[in-house]
Image (cartoon, rainbow, N blue to C red; front, side, top):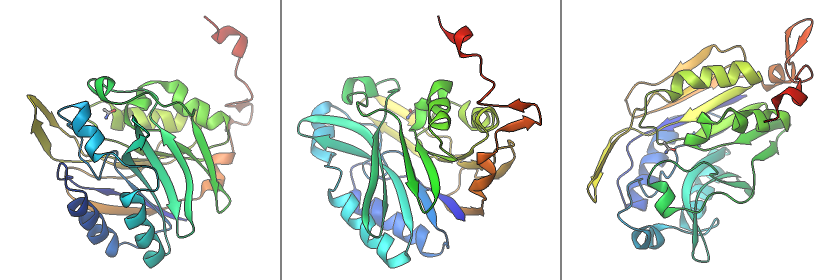
Length: 260
Ligand code: ACM
């Protein structure tokens, strides 16, 4: 199957501009599933909880509606990060949708830096969603630094990890190679680019969106350009957890020694 990511610099607070950029980038891409970065429709650097509340939306809000039309037009599955409003509680969430509608929704568990002032930590656990015979595990940006996130998804059967991001630290692209190897899964990281200077804060996003194979091979990695990149993967490979004929990655865990 063909899987890819979109990388671009969202305009803070301008949902329509960001949806138009995504539509333009996807237009020229042929893929079965595309991943769009964390918080792509709002931008990242919220000045206050009040501002975030004004920009957040329910899971089936305007971002979902616009992307659903794109799914139908392109006969494609999309996964994307957005600010989710559930009554007055806001989550840093990602949804996975196809032309028939919502497949699933994940709320980021490990919040990064000032996100802790803005969002509630995810309350619906890690999600593994089956779509057209493949199992997709969802995690968002800073979830990467906890190996437990990817491991939990792998233990639940994920073959491909979808990882929308707004990375500012330099470590993650290389760390995802390890996440792929140690779980024998594909990983897709869709990061953003550009800078945001607002409310006394300045973030520079590192780009380097990438797709990594279960053997750790980097199938594609962007630099800091606006792009849509797609590769062919075989998710069935991720079902084989044998590192050697005598080492099964998951079956050989010695869980009793992992307690603390
Ligand atoms: C991050 O979690 N957005 C770094």
